[in-house]
Length: 281
Image (cartoon, rainbow, N blue to C red; front, side):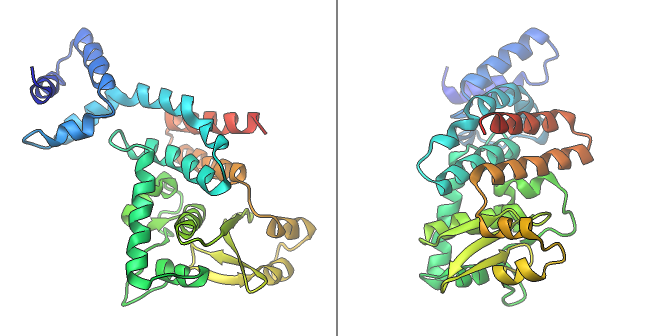
């Protein structure tokens, strides 16, 4: 039996109510999970919404187990940029669905960097911020999702890339990861309540508000004049955010997002990842 015929046969059994059949389907789909999206391209029809949902449900246990097993591997990568990208890729790929693999994020970011280079050539941090966040001809590539600020999707970089919407931390991370492809050293600032990017330019430290049109602010001005300014705030601004801090803050955002929608299973997953991260501090 050809792979395409076998896949068609398996899909025809999705609505079978037998527990034995469903368990067999789960084993079969799990065993071919890696190549499943490619195999589906050879079918003469797309999956229906019900089939897409059913396949996702069958694959969910394996996807959760894989995320749990591989989660902390980012810690052993060579630098903070690659660590951050891998950690975000794992979270985002899981959120985005069974068709998406963590490695797909690097491909999407590479394609975006190529688009930026075709448009503007080499850019510095301010020029890249303008390319990403400034309004041009009545449109903007990426902007803060102020209308649905607490949705979990704001932390899914695949969704951010597709919709152009995100929250402060996802947009700052996107700016950083894209900048890394231009050789621009962009870091993060773990600012309370509103994550910021952090850039060194012309012997000055700048904080970049990617949620609000990529606005550049002198770090010294923020430290002095912010309503919550105090010695602890100055330390937060002075020290770049570590990868652990960024990922933990993203996981806490997801914890809150899933709490707001009463999605206990997803909330438990994000909490488990956060606990693993904190256990190795």
